[in-house]
Length: 94
Image (cartoon, rainbow, N blue to C red; front, side, top):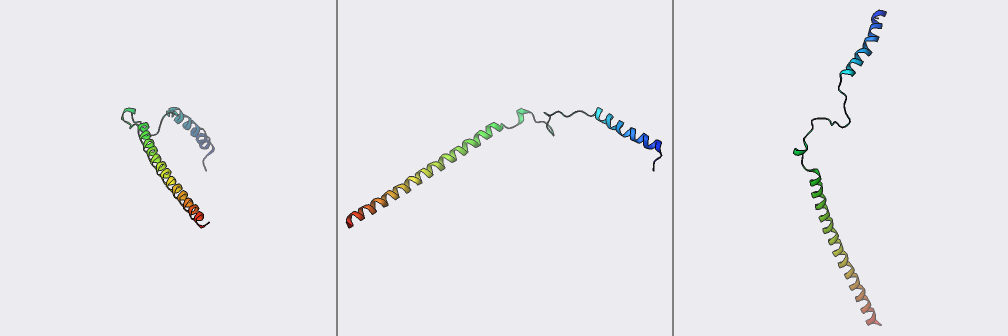
């Protein structure tokens, strides 16, 4: 076990060292990012890439909507044709 005077000295020294270290450290600001900062001029245009991606997605959606619309219209015409044929056949039987 440590003698009382060394124990007291250690108890006083540890917080003192801790305070000195905190005083010499540079505070980290909230707007700082980790790592190195890349200048805006050398970064790719994120908004431009996002806009191009959204344009392609919109074109794909338009194609899909057109295909679904065409398919729906084809199916409706087939149903109407069947109903018409059933109606004509029923009229011929009467």
